[in-house]
Amino acid sequence: MSSATALQLRLRGDGRTYDITLRRSDVPLRAGSYSTRVTTQPTGETTVVLPLSDFMPTSFGQPVGGAPSLDSNLARIDTFGVLLADKKPGPFALELLELTVIGGA
Image (cartoon, rainbow, N blue to C red; front, side, top):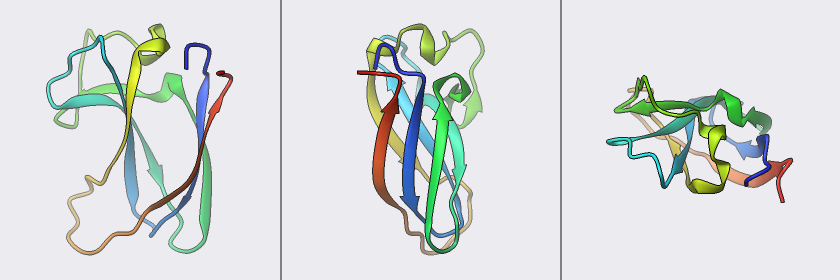
């Protein structure tokens, strides 16, 4: 990931918005991560390109000031996650069909 510039995701979703999260092992964020949002299509597939510069540090869903940018040390990314945090009750469905690192080895 040290030379990555973006992630490309191919998803099959339900029309809801999901947070895509990444964590760096060298940045302790209490209940936090670097995140960006993706809204899926209610039917069919969605392909999105997520520049790593769009991922913002958050803790408990709130922005964190003073944390380094995600892309200041990409080699330390160690966790990928998906979070549904729209506070809407009910069923959900999300399939990650493909994840591609753009610009990285």
